[in-house]
Length: 428
Ligand code: CA
Ligand code: CA
Image 1: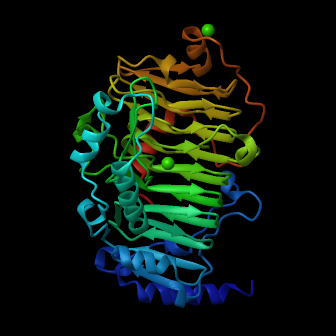
Image 2: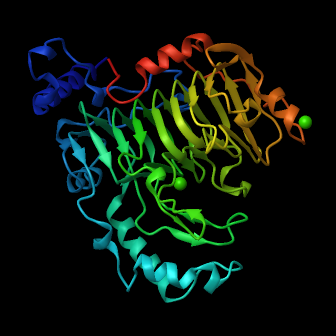
């Protein structure tokens, strides 16, 4: 292997440039250099074809440690392949007021589009909506950071990215690992009275958005809304003022993605795979593997799928509160979900029939899943439970069998293994 010694010397150079990695007597045992790690062969859809190596082959000159938003933005715009180590808290060093423009104020917006004034038949338009859109554009420009091909972003111990939307757009070969992602809040939610029966407030930003991209590995991260949870938001026009969108959304013709060993917590719309029912972009794509993730107190989209062959195995679902919970797996148009050996721990008020929601799909494969309610474990037939309560029934064959996956563990071990090892800070 002629490249071996070169890689090794580059890795040593990195270790020297990143003192945190070897710091302190407690770290005497060598830590793995996460920047140089690649997706193991066979680990989900991201291992298809050329596999996923991110920026692992970066020369030493393309390795950076970033500590703030400007540093992260600069590193992402630097030559690739690139390895970016995130150190400490990278956040948005501006407030919502810094982005507001064109005369936008929330009070003005609420006054203009109150259903008592504006009605409920058309979406907002006019000067206040224009000001909102212009303000949102200013925020987008600052907080949406594009992740190009050949990039690895890994957190050093304790690393957090807050208020930023990482956008993997039209890229190939990206790795994102070991980072706490918090609160990609939208300062300027849009009111849409025509969304649903009562209207909705909608927001733009995911913590991670993957659009039109291939070979992406999202691993061992922790996602939350930090100190800005949905439960703390006000209600306007009778609807929750939703400032968040997804935690990790995979859309717009993306393909070959593995989402493994992450913790997704305390969030509404968690993981959307496919954002439109139009087959032109997504049919035959959106191949995603979702394994060994912990979902704690998430309300919906765990994930919600359109079109894709999506292997969902060995995930640990916890639904502690029946009240706001909507569903776990969203069975969308032409979706081909293969849900295997997952563990669902539900509070007593949650009906297992509600773990699926039919968004226009017809069938899925579900096998080996386990239900825990009140300390008692029982086998769970997701499809039968759904069909007993709902019509039309869903079929029970997604029409494919996954071949790219790590060992599929018995569902009975998932609760222990995933709760111990998922999330940031758990790569050993
Ligand atoms: Ca989204
Ligand atoms: Ca039925």
